[in-house]
Image (cartoon, rainbow, N blue to C red; front, side, top):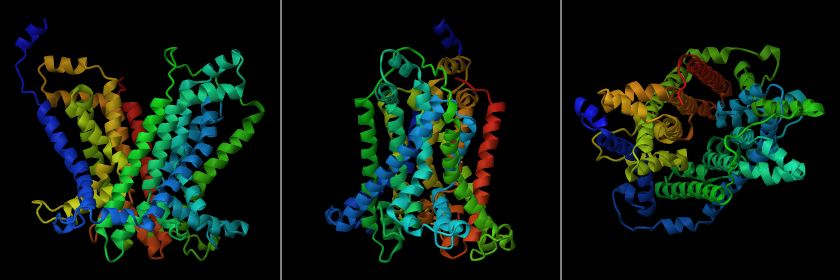
Length: 566
């Protein structure tokens, strides 16, 4: 029957090898080229001048600098402390959400999602306005916490509040999948509640907790805004701020920045390896089939203490930054404080009157974020198809290359793009133009659509594609009319995530934005440097509420209009 159908259907050119080659070239351009140039610059100190002289001439001296050891130690220390703080804060919340009937559980999930929509550098600036002398805390309660804020533990505190939702959602979803059923069986067999927790529930949750802890560590070591804002005043410098300083202070130390960038990539890769080792060494599987969440425990007399715990964390992590941002944007002068006579909308008026190029910054960021979302969406769908449907070494290489940006912090991508595209031999000059920012955003955020597309395609039967081909559809038609509609819900959410992150990205924008081009993040950052925090926070309010409304709108649209396949 199949042979008869194949004789009836006209033969079409198999475009899979062509698609794979084009996708591989795009990935090499986006991901491989920046990393290659960082590696070459680290090995050949004269590479920026077009010479391969003195290989390794700067690598060993740079690695032997006492300052570098301090930067590495500070980076690792900060990453581990933020991971520990996130686990201490998020694990109890996640366990309560998964195993008990917390009143308003879905609302708390939504509230704890909001830190993802508040850029870390805006949260850091908000805490600075709140806790510094004559800040909002002192105006309301008569004391300030400047000594704590501008210290190592102050940096840890602010960064934990930014990233703890990663562990919270992983813990709550993992523990919900494991459920209380297995622990209940253990207690029936004589185990005490503490034994059931440590011997059954937590071991089954190790993969999800390890993955979220790794993500928190990588997000911490690559974060620039909080260490640059708070750590600089505390004399606490990490690899990211060290790289930025070598690019921004004269004389420029481009080879040294490349060496530090390479170390940052290696540190992220070591973290990925440790997570892989932990999961494989301590992996537990439930053999009873599909996990059953089981009945949720009632809180009883603990109902109000648990509600107080959730409300306190939500207020500190979300309420304080949002209220500080709104207060700064809505007061006429910072020195006037929280007085009714000082409340004014002049910063928003100045914003929409395009003072200091505010509307241009908003338009630039939204345009670049839209372009990055579209490019990563198309590439993610193609890569996902090639990885899932084409089982070959070439597709595995594409999968590795597409996920490599997870181990490439934003500042490393920026350094690599500067080294790669600031060359005269390219036929098309993208350096010192908006295109280089688009390349940076696309490289950094490509893994999100790839992961979503992979997950979506693994839930789709290959029979859909076979039926389309038997019906005479070529690859392009099958891809556009069969696969993309099926992947639309998950792919749209991934593209929306790319849009939200790209519209507020800071470190790559600071290093790569050409003269005269301003984005939302660089606008806010420069307003604080120039002593205009009100205008900067007005822009922050617009950016936060715009992306939040867009995410909510697209989420509702995908649920109502797009069919869910799987």
